[in-house]
Amino acid sequence: MSDSSGETQRDLWARVRARLKTSVGEDVFTSWFARLELEELVDDLVHLSAPTRFLCSWVQSHYADRILEAFRHDLPEAGRLQVTMRVNGQARPRLAPAPEVLSEAPAAQPSSAAAAGAAPVAAPAMPRLVRDNGKGDALSGSAIDPRMTFESFVAGSANEMAFGVARQIANAAINNAVTFNPVYIHSTVGLGKSHLLNAIAHQVSEADPSKNIVYLTADHFMYHFITAVQRQSALGFKEWLRRVDLLLIDDMQFLQGKSATEFGHTLGTLLTGAKQVVVAGDAPPRDLEMLDERVRSRLSGGLVVPISTFDLDLRRDIVQRRAEQVNARFGMQFPTAVIDYIARAVVSHGRDLDGAVNRLVAANQLTGELITVPLAEKTLADLIRARDAKRVRIEDILKAVSRHYKVPRNELLSARRSRDVVRPRQIAMYLAKALTARSLPEIGRRFGGRDHTTVLHSVRKVEQMIKDDLELGQEIELLKRMLEE
Image (cartoon, one colour):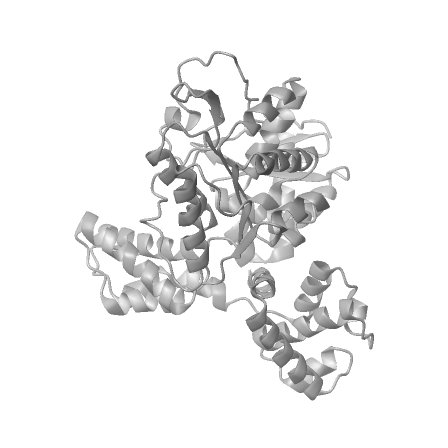
């Protein structure tokens, strides 16, 4: 697929956007696709850009197939999608510059993020050479967000285990010890995985600046590895990684291909050398199908820590903490009723809670209106409507479960009783009861004419499994989120 001319590319993108809007509907299109831009078309690769890292991750993981399908109407060879982040209107290149390992490190140069004046979280720095007080040269990875510390993290029942483990890792690393290795933290989007990885790196680097600490997102890892191979400097890249004291890899679900294999080799070397490795992803290791079985086994053999969906108490604590920060900075009071309203109405994830507070601050500053529940209802209407307006159909559930568990739709409706079919079928019935207004008899009829008692048994069975298995609970929560979005 060759590069298109500017005019042709604009026309193509306009047609693709129109197809997507027809396919997903106005609300979903506005939420996830409206701010995407087409950057380039190279060979079978479609390169899009988005204004935030979260949007890049969400579109890549949830809508890649649908976007590629929309492109194939005009470009049948479209086979891969890559979504990178725009900073100051410019998209990050598909391949970042390759790191170079030198025998004598030059003085540290300003990162690209700093040069652009961007916030660290918005513009991750490319790896660069720094001097580490005579203990050897090291490459730094993505920029650490100084706001993401243990002190700014709000802990509750959903994340207290992950929080405790992260603090223990940091303290051990400062004292040149290793507690759990590797550590794998997983959850759906916006629940604090990246915050904890940043907090570990921040605390260790503050306590001992000589430590070789590398924090990399999986896409950065892939960019640097591929570029190193192209520039015939892969050996230097591997040696760099194997000299680190603390390696933190974020968004593990995006690691694939040869770079995933290289990560597996690096992981083994680091573990053998008692170096600390912390990884974060959106699914348990066993579900990262793009990774080699040996890598998944290595990750599963360490400490696997889930973060579950925030309950009302934790959501309220997060809003309360954010409101206190706003009060300290602007002298703005958030009434208790408003804090309670946000905690009850915004149930998606932590980023939306933070965004809800920011919106109310902006509304107060722009209009002069007092921060009240009516102002919150008006200002946050789209956040709440996005949750309430989506009508989930049983057909949607059947498709999602069939795709997720790789069980044909007709088998979910069949009389087959093998375990690989029964469990997905029960989960599908549970989701139908939880996400639709259909009665038990109606659900039974849609699932191959089953009796309502069968549906009730399935619902109760899954509810018990969720209580007994945190990973299954996360898996079902992810399915819910996908269906509701």
